[in-house]
Amino acid sequence: MTTNAKKLKIGLVLDDGLDSLDGVQQYILAIGGWLSDQGHDVKYIVGETHRQDIANVISVSRNIKVKFNGNVGTMPLPTSNNKLKKLLDEENFDVLHVQMPYSPFMSSKLINLAYKNTAIIGSFHIAPNSKTVYYSNKLLGLWLRSSLKKFDQFLCVSEAAREFAKNTFGINCAISPNVVDYDLFNNAKPIAKYQSNDSKTILFLGRLVPRKGCQILLDAIKLLSKDNKVPTFKLVICGKGFLETSLKNFVSTNNLDDVVEFVGFVSEEDKPSYYASADISVFPSSGGESFGIVLIEAMASGKSAILAGDNAGYRSVLGSKPEMLFDPLDSVALAGALKELLTNNSERENYADWGENYVKTFDIKKVGPEILDIYQNTLLKKHK
Image (tube, rainbow, N blue to C red; front, top):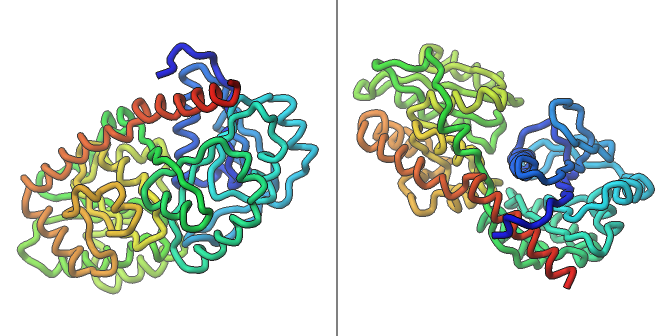
């Protein structure tokens, strides 16, 4: 490990902005924060961003909202070459770490303008949610051919992302997983109102959009509410999205108001406390996941048993524990899995204990030095 090497100037590059907190944004902020703590000079080179609470953000484009892979994100409008060249001249980066796939209108231009002695690393973050996404990225790969040749190394966050990179871009890459600040989540204090010896807390944390599966979870909760063998529980739903009204109507129509609570958006600061309050965390996503940062966040709490939809990304995290996976389109199967954990304290605690130990694999204190080694070794090879 290259612990005594010189301090680096690093640009973490993302075409989207940092106003949303999806997995890729969380990834670069976690990596960037750890690198900064080690004394490296980190800049976030991103699309249009309005939040003011992050240091060293360089917003280089105007962005428009787009729907992509079951999500709503933003895409940059064409960025001025002069603006990008001025940025590169002023900063003289040792490393540009680009989040992939990327746009021809911002990141591609930056890569093509980068100095020859700059190490360029790419990280793939997505798994396709549809054939449209798959084939559009095949075409994107052809469009980006010239800038792709400039990369020194490609990484991906999971096996699902690696398959995507290979099948759509023809790129082989090494797995470098998503990360979690283990101590931050493990030391979080639970929220008092969710702590009761008489009731268990089930947590859903995610966007209220179809592929995240909150409706399937509510269908399962409806079944459980009619089963007198199931102990008292409360479902806490954290998140916003366009399905919120219909989900709330479903809860009211089916007389579930006493067992379901909608919290709304939860900040990054408050999120660890919600995981620490949950006996069971459920993530019923049907697809479009390349990894699942929410899984490792919940496991890092050490308090919560995990149940997750059996999609490629979540399977890449939980494949060695298949009993934690369920068919994300089968509310009956989910209800059965929830009933088992609600009625079997020993099994629920075993799930939580396993996750708390396993998630240390993804701790930023472990993965951060590995990424830094990749940067340092790539620079050594370039400068030979």
